[in-house]
Length: 367
Image (cartoon, rainbow, N blue to C red):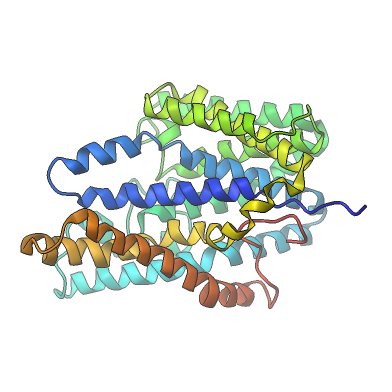
């Protein structure tokens, strides 16, 4: 029988849920009274889910591309396809926020937090290096630091491949431990404005590479079937335990270890039973726009919350916040679907030389 394609649909669902939680976290800052601090504090405890994003990325990139990375040309094609996936939406959102900044500078809009709207940061965003330590503050589209961090990981991906080929999984684990040790030294030296590398954003590229490498380690262990796992339950339980520890504000390293274990166990179970997640297939029309939800949700935030809610509806008292909250959330999902359907694919093909850009869910059925 022909080998069944592996879709890793559970990972897609996790990324979709994490994108929704990030969106909710930012939107709840606009809640009235004491609701906002309580809600945002709770969701802030789930911050390590961003590390799961990067771990899954490392897992999928390693699984799909490591075997294809043999020449400089292969690396160039890899970079082109991955940039074609991320860069168009990043630039489009930047243009929107730059237009808002211009309206503020022209006196058309009244903008708070001048650091967010400084035009000197535009080149850093265009080059996607704003999470490399080139600035000490977030500006324009806050979530876009992760795009910069992801591109940093792509640039270093050949290092991961070479280490894995020369020394195997053990060498890759050694690379991961050495990188984390370096991040710990830098954290103790006060390099990270946030205090510790595990919650860095303006220096998030270095945090992301640790997660990305951990995902690559998991991919190597899955590829060699390190141990047999057929049920998805162990991986789901590992994720549930990680979430419980986040909510309880437990130590970060056990949480990251549990997220790694969840990815490893689900990777093993899905490769063992590729058809086992077919029931999730109808959800893929939504899960494939997780990146769009994550990177675009600040636009409805500006339109429907910063202006619509704060400046019109809240003073008028005409509608409750949680009723209105559905509007920006549904608008974000709709915008992400439209972007995926009509914008990202077309611009991605232009950047990738007419080829279809890399699939956002990295399905292993010829993606």
